[in-house]
Length: 259
Ligand SMILES: Nc1ncnc2c1ncn2[C@@H]1O[C@H](COP(=O)(O)OP(=O)(O)O)[C@@H](O)[C@H]1O
Ligand SMILES: [Mg+2]
View 1 (cartoon, rainbow, N blue to C red):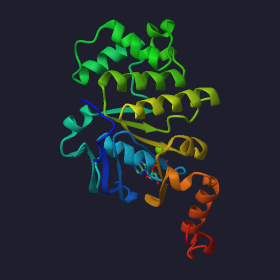
View 2: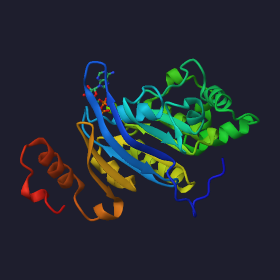
View 3: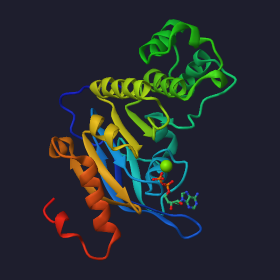
């Protein structure tokens, strides 16, 4: 798929009244709506249990919504999962890579599954080098990879799949500061190519560093959504705590009014 950065003004990723009630009755997502355009990074910020993973899992059709839908380039992920999945690459804490395959073999496998044939070994090597995996790692089995290396391998797959949509669940948790920074820089360069990126995090610092839009999720609802320009120069941690305080008490705190 050709991606151009200039004239695009349609959602690549879209949540429309997305709701999920698990079988045990837990309402994990409660009418969540947002969109992510090509060339944008949308960050879901929230604590444990906020509903972040649930939202991402619906985009990947690992689970179905109970109401509303998630769409990738207009394609409903639960009504047309195969077509939707072709457009998306997924990088998670437990990246779904084959442990007994080398990095090169994983790339080859996922490129083929994604319908991309005709790549050479050099193309794979270039993708792995681009994400910062040095030559000696290319022929190592994934089971010997650190978390940071797995994440990079996941992004290399996104690159060879030429996926216009990239979904990441807590991608920087557990990475040391240097690895976290490198990973964020990579996301920035993928955004520059016009990919739409949806990521979850509980890390306020990383959210502010990379997001075009930040949505604070709490109890399955978006309780705040702001563009980077509205947050610039403000203390996101203060903002986060204020919003959380407002939503966890019956009476909305007066300091929140007008924020
Ligand atoms: N498979 C499941 N069955 C029942 N409840 C679940 C399941 N997965 C998550 N939940 C619940 O849904 C809510 C949201 O969870 P999750 O999406 O994992 O949040 P986050 O990723 O933000 O930590 C939590 O209350 C969690 O306990
Ligand atoms: Mg989670």
